[in-house]
Length: 71
Image (cartoon, rainbow, N blue to C red; front, side, top):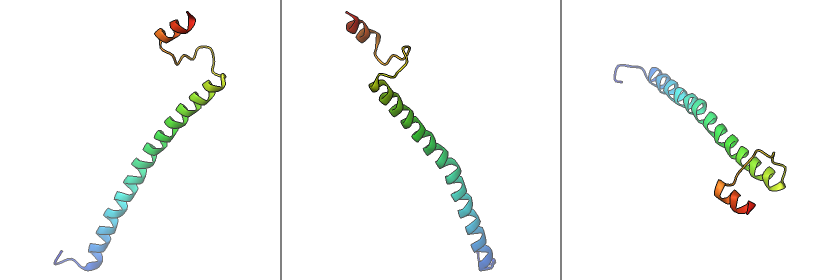
């Protein structure tokens, strides 16, 4: 750092900072998007099932509970 001019030091620092920013955005946003999609799907399934609009093949109960309900 002693022999380099200040402008080169700043440009290297800003380049490293930009790379870290872009990496955080490109890795962080898809992860958050996936989390939000997952929660949305869980909420949608619960909401549709509570309205009784779920298709007949959708089973959220365990086999034991289903046998108890049928008995």
